[in-house]
Amino acid sequence: MDECDLTLRDLKEIQAAFLRVLKGVFHPRVKYPEPVTVIAADGREVEV
Image 1: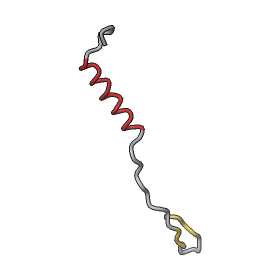
Image 2: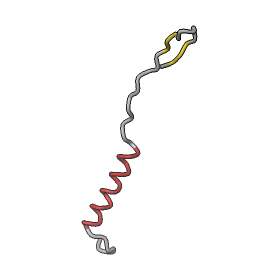
Image 3: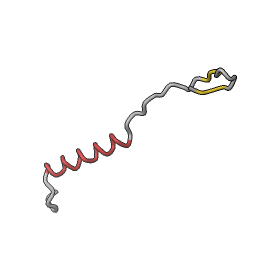
Image 4: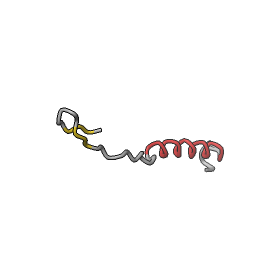
């Protein structure tokens, strides 16, 4: 740290930026329900 112009405040801002990016990349996925197959009035199988 003595050899560069970065301050602790700069490092905290860099950390916050990395955290925002990583949270965006590794966010949990929404669990969607499995599609349900039904028989239409004309006898076709349709996923809903």
